[in-house]
Length: 456
Image (cartoon, rainbow, N blue to C red; front, side, top):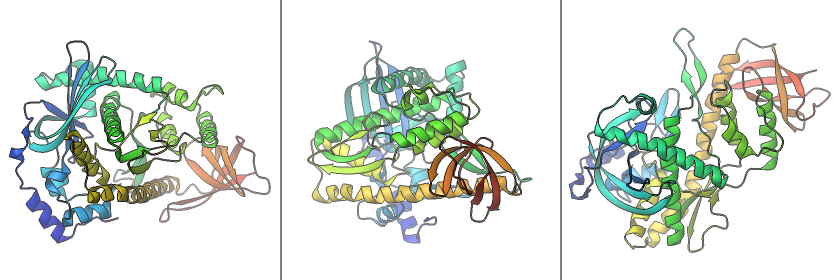
């Protein structure tokens, strides 16, 4: 993981941060706002949403224009290709671009005039796309809100500023888009990821935390999903692009997830599909967040697919049940910058150069490999935190259910704490879905390792 930036990269970024976007189209009259986790500084997106006269929506979505600051062939771009994703760990953060850009000049910070690629949608009352225009311009966000602040306003009217009208329309929009997702048979997981935070000083360690569901976060995510869908449609129409694809869920993994859900106390009828089950979950259930974090294992995972000419044989993101592309996080994800620039070209009736197409074609390998490393880091951090939480409990027995059998090892779902681990079997290998006791034999906090054995 690359944390520190070379001096030449920092110098070039600081010089680029001085660029003036005055020559770009002036979109500063649009009352954009941002909605992000508390303390965020790398703000990729800002929105403004208004009710149309016929009950539809007018939606403006501004996305940070990294390409305005980062020239192709520059040392900042070369460094970004080595990073590809922003990596997060409890004690550090490794961004794609230097802070002078990612948390400064290129970030859609409140009251800062910033270059952006703006998606201007006209949507019907079902929040389906009627028209879309994509253009570069300079924007000014009016406020930086958290999800909690956005939800509090919708529920109680805490803001009096004109821009606050977007929050009420955002709710209506988000609820309509959720309905469309249900109609398509899609299912986007409604929470953030499991993550690890430093524990209180008295505990001198780390703990696994689960982010609580927040309706405003889901409404906001629906804007991003719609924009990614619109981007994919434009690239498919233009016969060139970079899609985010996902195959259909694998039946075996769905069955393993079904066992895990039942172990944690969820009712899941045999005739209920995976998508129907996830959509039916009560967010107030005390174990819904760790369950949905595990739901990410149901599918093989998403891939990037570049194309020119013929589209991929299966261009769908099957979890979303629609074509989709990553385009809304260019400060934190390398590929998005290039998709945005391609979309602007297609909007203007232009075609990408051979060098630009070649860059698109190189991105899947870079992005997929980097995501694998990021997932390994995330898993290692969680393993470390779980090992820390279970240290000193060697010899204890835990109630669990067998999810999968792999030779002399089984994967089990422990009921409390709600973790999913591997355990060695003894003389008799338990059957799938069997209720068992597993004993914690050893813990290594340094290695993030927990050794369990099925206790006969």
